[in-house]
Length: 353
Ligand code: TLP
Image (cartoon, rainbow, N blue to C red):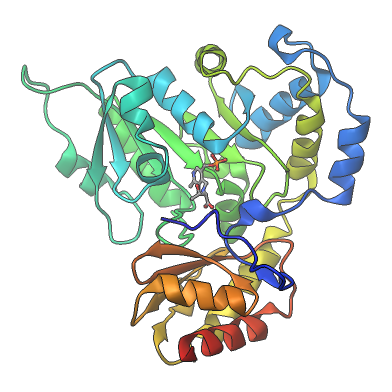
């Protein structure tokens, strides 16, 4: 339901684009690295820059091997394909991206059965998983995989703390399940906790992390796991038409993301908090600044979201809907530090309109 196609209102200069951190532009350093990248045919395994990115991404995420993929969606779906057999059950948090926003991929690409587990805050726990699991029985399909999302998008960028994730993955492993981590924004989760991404992903058998969101690369995500898992995902990527050729021009930007863009996410988090604190003072909406843990802000309205989003667009603030009366705002590198006051003024005007 996010209004990804919303564009700046014609004739009016764009002021603040808070639709997503996917709108970030590559940095100057990235553009330089892209123009100078050494390349080869990656389907033959001959692109030195892609090979370097995959090596560094594996170490970054604390896994044996990694694969460069065009999108986070492809990374998640390849993981499900590599872990599951047709008919298997995949446990997903009820509001997770892999269930909500990936076109039914679990069912369509892996022929597996997603089982939604509702949570109050996007955080699956051993108890909730245990309630969903069934003992082996002739009537039941095979429980195979649990997917965890950190940070959690529809929960408003909430973080699953490392100890909680470790406990959940220990529980899942003890019951013979694999664990896939949708870490599209794992770097945000790591920065918020002051830990490395490898530490944050330790309990996962596989992890996907996007380079094209807050980390500013123009394209690309990485999927990491054991060597044999990555070999299976590499075959799956070819099946889906994701075998790219001189992809080093893209991987070069991804290397800048991994090497130097993570620490600055703290600025995005501070900015999100500041915007939420300004919005919390307005009438006609509710915004809980305390629940802002990373770079997302959820605003609940006392009326329909779409007309307010349109009015905000006329005020030069772009954002998306995350429910009939809910607006999502996402901070990123291309939002000015002075934005909180401007965003609050735009909301006040839009709510008056
Ligand atoms: N999320 C996008 C939209 O698809 C909703 C956004 O603007 O937030 N996992 C998570 C948790 C995500 O938030 C996203 C993208 C993905 C996977 C998919 O990544 P891409 O867009 O690269 O396929």
